[in-house]
Amino acid sequence: MIAGHLRRQIVRGQLAEGDALPSETELMAEFDVSRPTLREAFRILESESLITVRRGAHGGARVQLPDPRVAARYAAVILQYQRTTLEDLYEARIVVEPPCVGLLAEIRSQEAIDRLRAALTEHDAVADDPMRSIQVHVAFHSLLIELTGNQTLRLLMGMLENIIDMANLTQVESTAGSSVYDRASRKGLAAHHRVVDLIEARDAEGAEQLWRKHLTEARDYLVRADIETVLDLMG
Image 1 (tube, rainbow, N blue to C red):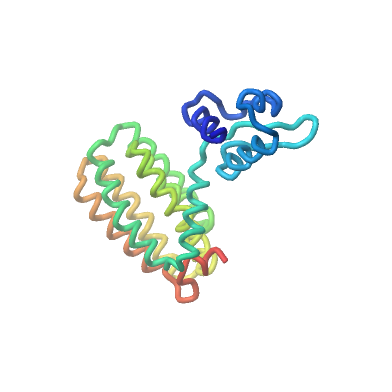
Image 2 (image 1 turned 135 degrees about the horizontal axis):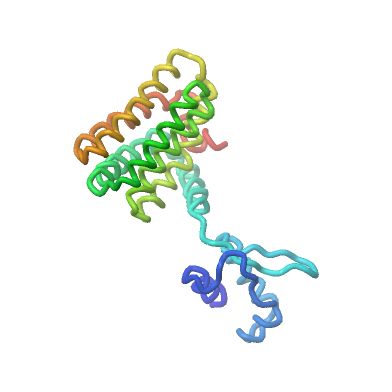
């Protein structure tokens, strides 16, 4: 009950990030509970990454805002336990992400186009640096979802991307400098440029079709015989 009360205060914005919770003595009096009970409530909130607790004379509990990366990490644990294949993960991405791009083409604003063009300029500038290029590449995918303005899609795709991004980095590390990498990199960057053109033209169907093709080709490049499951990837 104590954890639930404090959790509601955090998610409703009544407690801001970095705010110190009242002292243990004050909270014990407010809820009429013992110190072990209060500390158990703190442990629950710590496990949810909603507070941090420091011990000692200058310690205490401070508020952390809910972080989508916490959900992504937990999802990754479940997928590892279930021996989920990377191909399974990519198929989910192919189902969800292209309609998001189509949605963005329907609702697009000039601000969205400006941000996408700026991301492409950054990518063009680092195209010859494999590790930096892949980081900018995956950030572009996240930006497409962000610009839809749909918070649920951002959270769902963030859970997938957390693992897919790791697979991307692992594959680039092992293939950088090869003809396979060069071809995949060029085709990927070209697809990014083309999809922004289609979004700007409000061609939702064309943008969705192009993005599905791009993600399918990316899956074929990223799937590896030596890394079949999420467990293989994350160890």
